[in-house]
Image (cartoon, rainbow over all chains, first blue to last red; front, side, top):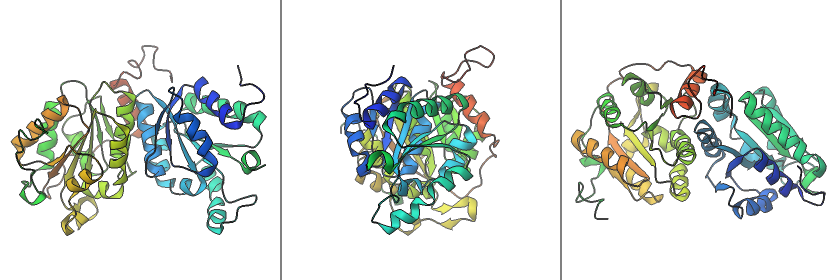
Length: 171
Length: 217
């Protein structure tokens, strides 16, 4: 069962979270994620936390999974860039499927040079750590990619990242 | 705060807290755990002493990710609200992630107990002094971050009394404990996949190995 064809990407992601029993949301905010965060907070299916750093979000989601609760960490590109140490020392060696949703700032029309430069590190870091990652670029593909990424992460006990591309949010 | 003040009429300062031995206190903590409480051991000597006190299936030993024992413990506490969760960490570790205490407060969890071993030094890297030796008081810091039930432990007897209370009364709790410069009593087996798998079975997230309920949930 997928969401109706008029639904936006936020509602489609929420439907995917529910299908995969992902109940814990640990977010560090981003303007691109604002509407999604509001919808998650308004939905009693989810427990929503706002940790002070992305490392905390990853660790909370890791701790929840080893205690039987599935979750996802939400962040923007610059926040992801703070994560290599925790990824390399917690979800990867312990084989914990920490899910990450990263809004991709710093490309396709960004105005802030710091965002542009840090954006260049996003996929190289994910790829050199061998973390499965996929971009969400069209609203029609959101549920397919999100569902399959989450299913694979949980069944292989590996972290994974979903990247929200400007092709999805900035058109 | 009637129940809070019964063993500490006036809150203790860091300077008034007795300097004790981490290995001894970790063994005392273990002896007080009667209900399969989860314990997250922060990096370095904190989890070495947790290991040396005798492995329990509900122990999780960190490697790297310095400062994040409390965040991992918060995740475990959210996943299993009926179980008490103890996060053990050092002063140098907590100084890296002070914001986590605010996250704990805002989360509303009641089943998390944070114990900070404050020896004033990065013991494992050559005993360079930490900021607590320069005047940072982590218990006052924790109160400022919203953890009202934060206190310095007076001595060994007080440690057992405070842990007993934290295991039975709603938290979150933070116990500041001053510790000496003695080395840990052992070294943890560094096998992260096994540590994680045994912990999950110890918490009942997975069944016994071979029972047919070990597949990823």
